[in-house]
Image 1 (tube, protein in one colour):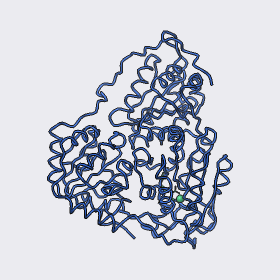
Image 2 (cartoon, protein in one colour; image 1 turned 30 degrees about the vertical axis):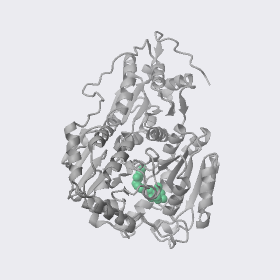
Image 3 (cartoon, helix red, strand yellow; image 1 turned 90 degrees about the horizontal axis):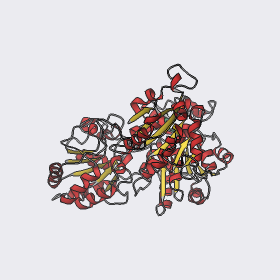
Image 4 (cartoon, helix red, strand yellow; image 1 turned 90 degrees about the vertical axis):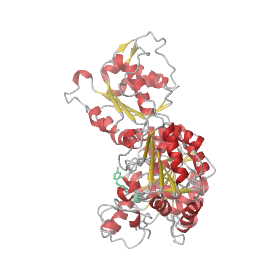
Length: 589
Ligand SMILES: Cc1ncc(C[n+]2csc(CCOP(=O)(O)OP(=O)(O)O)c2C)c(N)n1
Ligand SMILES: [Mg+2]
């Protein structure tokens, strides 16, 4: 690999492209995912000069690159970086940028742009990407003066990582990449109105929360993604140990508190556990930590935690009282608030009967599936993967759909940042590329994408990246031949009318809902042949008796491996609280 050939000293003239790439190196970026084109070529040329320090991975689609950057960011807590050319390259990043915004993921997305001299003329491959992304970035730049670049890079990393993390876009016109100047690396940041310093809970507020806890008879902790991004899992665990309060997590929060702890009530919300949702229904104190009262959690807002006093701690003031009014709203870094609380908090006086009630509910209404089913059920495959991988460093990514919710229900997460799910945006196609990014960040870990056949095909081309870049990702493909989650809604709310939810040829009976069996008769496409074409190891299993051996073969394979599991399409994710409804409308059968 080439070593750094330029610049040698800071007083040298540097091109815009070199300044940008050197800034990445100076911000300790180890890997970026970049797909070249006319308007980003100068930056790619610069990247080759820094090959030793900064690995550039070529995805096979810019969306794959941006989700891989997210996988890197979500699993490490550091900034993920992706790059694309102007026009179609840039617009291919849009979904992943929106995704990062909704899940508060620190991402720096760099796009090439047409030269400043032709911006606004509908030049070849021109899109106003800053305008397109205005509402889905935390901040964005169109760099028109090379002298601004060192400052812009500094600001981008600062904004992406401080406060509530999020995506920052830097649009780089080609002529700015090619211009030269002597960069002023010390140019101070200019971010009026944003100092990046997290607000901190006041001592009075901490006392108020401790007092509310002391008085509570039926308290519940509702913990979310803020615990993960705020690196507050340790403090949360101490808080729970000190107070003995049962705890439920959002999809984004899984891993914040270990699933095998007796006080863990698992996930709440639309497909959350019966016991978590009942506990929120009946609690008298809801301690909401790093959450945003998302509609998939609350259902009908007025009915959510309606008997409870609500404490809401979040770093983003705009989340407080946004969806649900809190009695004690606290704008604070959640790690700090928990640390301060842990200094003074005492266990509530008499919550033993409440804790027992929650635990009895948990025993009586666990997540369940038909263990006598003759084939392999999705839930069974995930439980078995969970069992086989509990003692090794494992990361799980998912697509979006039934398989995602079953993974959230049946995989037992113990550590933060080991579960990666496109949660707020719910983007199909997230699983494979994000796994790729995780593997790039953690070469020795086992990284498994639990995917659906629909979602997997949205970024299937990244199999090539995994193979060519030596990223031995595993895919557990729960192949039900359908857009299962939509099928479930058709079954429940549309009289089983199939409306474009079968993934096989249109002359198959399943296309119109006439399939007679629990399984689709034919299987399409042939995922094993596809995988082999990409250089992957692959196998299909249908029989229950082959499940454990199949999973072991996947886990133990040295290279990337796809395990295609034939599963039925008539299985429903339960429990389910239909959108906008209340816990009393929960469907359990
Ligand atoms: C990009 C995108 N398009 C459409 C949807 C709507 N949608 C949500 S789940 C789902 C079905 C997913 O099917 P699959 O990946 O096979 O998972 P399954 O539900 O079958 O487990 C669809 C179409 C989405 N979430 N994302
Ligand atoms: Mg499917």
